[in-house]
Image (tube, rainbow, N blue to C red; front, side):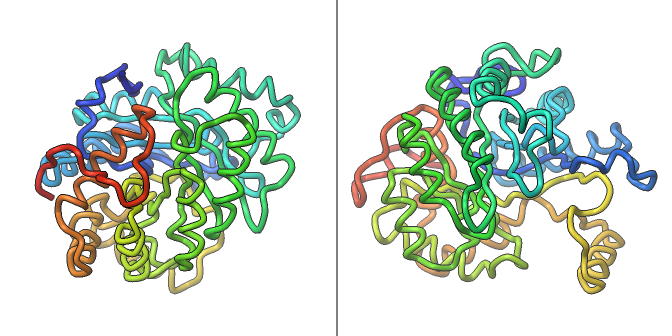
Amino acid sequence: MQVQTVLGPVGLDKLGRTLMHEHLFIAFPGAEFDPAATFDRASFVAEAVKRLRQLREEHGVRTFVDPCPIELGRDAAMMAEIAEKSEMNVVCTTGFYFEAMGLPVYWRARTTEEIAELYIREITRGIGTTGVRAGAIKVATGAPAITPLERKFLDAACIAQRATGVPIITHTQDGVCGPEQAQAFGEGGVSPHRCLIGHCCGNPDPAYHRRVVETGAYIGFDRIGILRLQPDEVRADNLVRLVRAGYGAHVMMSQDRHCGWLGKMARQLSPEEQAHIDQRKAAGDWPPPYTYMFTDFVPMLRERGLRDEEISSILEENPRRFFAGEALPAAGANWMPRATAAI
């Protein structure tokens, strides 16, 4: 069994420590028309390579999954260049964003089958003329409910997943609709363990997390460090609670961070937020580094009693099993079968 990266397939044993939901570059549609939105490709690539090398050399990360939606500035050729120069496995995806902030008009008008055909082509033949093949499918839904248009794109993802065997990685908005996504995938004939329901740490309710994992899907605590959405202390409490309830095998950890962003944010920032960003830029610390997971959040998990081998299994064994398509162990069963490196 192999996993498709932007540089070609690699064996499961080469994945190692994996961040399952991060981004290299983001550009919301329309930013390209802003004369103030400049982009120096060479400088960005150099910075991204530096940051990925830091992850690899200081924290042992070997695989970086970037589920950038097609319309949010996904650049497969640039991903491949960064992966080669940083010596990092980078996995990209096919798939679009949610209705309120994405789904280009052209693709809204396509049938479910036409959307699925695009996804299958990008997985099996490559993205455009780059030759880079997607290794997973991205799905996104908004809040407070999945819209009919979003459901069409979920159905297309199900068709593509069944045809290609690659897994599905999702975005949820405001910590809602995770169980509903899982239900839609099941109705589309996709096994729950082939799905990672993303951004569930945006919901502080442990009962919501239990509803997600009880569907048999993986659960993403993958906005670690985004404090305006949730304090990390709450994320750590809820993550440890799931592990102690026997669902450690379901958990994925990541940060949903980026290295570069074209133009302004896709929302208006408050004066306080802008001042904070300006201050961090002046200190050379913006965008925030990918290393926060290891320098700040992992210590929180240790303080709450999580052992290093449990943390390592979340970062290594769970992604390997997810990409392998292996069934999840029953709740409470042994979920740390492999020797894992120290954090």
